Length: 595
Image (cartoon, rainbow, N blue to C red; front, side, top):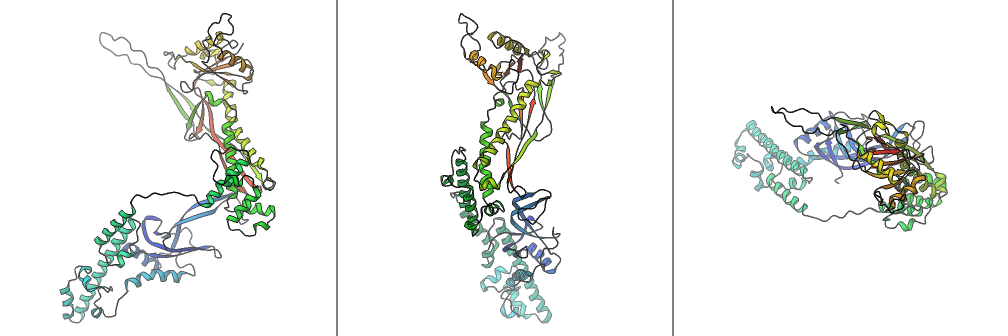
């Protein structure tokens, strides 16, 4: 059995054996494993320390696949733990280590009833090394405890030559025994070296060394065989990844419920139509049956929901998938307008970030007769941008599930998705209406040259456009010639603005005078603008960004997380979005009082 690796002190560069079997003793709440140490010198050193008792610690490396958060005062889903606590409900072990200092001193080698059996396995290595050994090496012809074929004796014993073997019987008494013992030690050392080199080489390529060692191959022969095996393994193959039945079931059930809730699914999973007409309780029952639970059909509704909502079953994940689809669709389709004329930015953390802008360079001046250069400076402007977290939590109770309330499953997440988008929209337009300070004056101020008057007309638009064109860079020497791209109005002025911008002639003239703004501006109307007279011009955000919606790491969609909560008897979701609305320049914005 090949199910893992035995390491020393969790060091992946120090493998010392392999795991033959591993199981969980549910009654005793402990894990039990049988291991076999490698035969190289480093592994044998650790093995001797284990059997000698100086190394007793055992630890495992693992990853957490699923967890449950229990708040303070609440109980875990299985009723065993009281919060606050984080519980790993599903985890996967991937290595076992012999360690010098274990994290838990109550576990380790020799601390369970299975210790003698484990030691017997470890000691089987020593028995294998001693296989074929006789009490009289002289008669059996064995060298260092290994019985070898006659044709391999000279090759495998290294420096021990046939003449040395012949000379050994002519020695008398202790001298003769010493010569035989020396030959044995030399053979053992060479065999250990052979085994160690072959084991290390095979381990580097994730191959088993057993066959090469048992066949008595030399290191060179083993190396050639390993290369041949690797070449065969690495021939191009076509790999097809196929989803397992559990994944197919969860995908089909989630898409089927989404279709039933009226959520558009671009490419429904295979079998989704089969779940479109099923109730939430029926899907919960199928989840339990697929998890191997018996007697599901005889459960009461509340018992069925409770069983489906606890543990690591598929039902909570299916509901969360549907809720997330509803939230995402609603967020994307919310009727907002900020995205049309604002810039998008990204901060990597929640600390303030600086946006820098360089001024224009000074004009070149005529040189003097002496050839002196006049020094000039390029000034720098900077504004701060920041990101904050905005979020809410909501729940769907077991009552809604029992009542098959698909509206609660789809409508509530959709409401919060739209609310997240509207929250950004509101903060963007508050910048226009609250008129914050930038570069020493209000955003719209005569000092900034971006405050005008007059109702929407060709004449007032022409005067406003001229003001924007005359805006200067932060050094005050370069005229920017800013061109408006958006006409932003409250709903009361939307029709007037649309008629003006779509007309090829000036509506105020009787002689068909051409309209220079015909189809030159995009009309944006938003009810967040409470002043029914004021209107605004904005430059294209790619040319001169003025208002930036800044997202954390560029993530523009809310994050939605779910957890089965003990106190809600249902599923609790939280939705949050990390963003900020930041004013970074005034030169691409103009306001008219409309009067």
